[in-house]
Image (tube, rainbow, N blue to C red; front, side):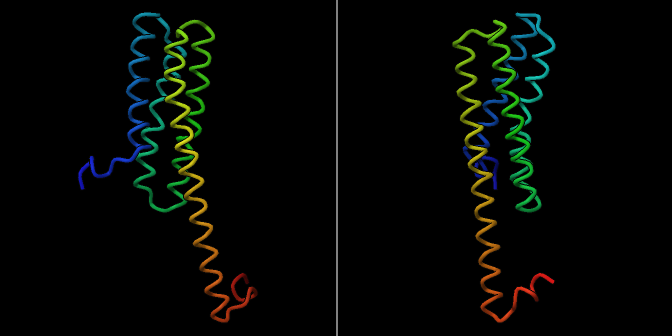
Length: 144
């Protein structure tokens, strides 16, 4: 399977955001001589893509959820740094709104993926319990 075959909207979106964040970092450090916040947003803005890829290669459903939850937190942190950069006039409204839109879209995608996986896990667990109970196992047997 090639990388193109593995592509997913969340993977593409997180990678595209990472590219934009790297370019923002270059702009902030070279053009604005801003080195503190730019380093923070570089870390938080590139982390979601790495965690999405780790999640896709997770060892279990729980690992998948854990990695995507980290991506979710990092994306939320990126939005914080964007808000701060805009509020302190390092970003124009146009720059800010564009990056914010991409970040919020990614955050929604990640949240949706986490909730979907949790629902599927709960349904699978429920189906297993029902099967066991219909097979004659009692709750006492199952949980003792």
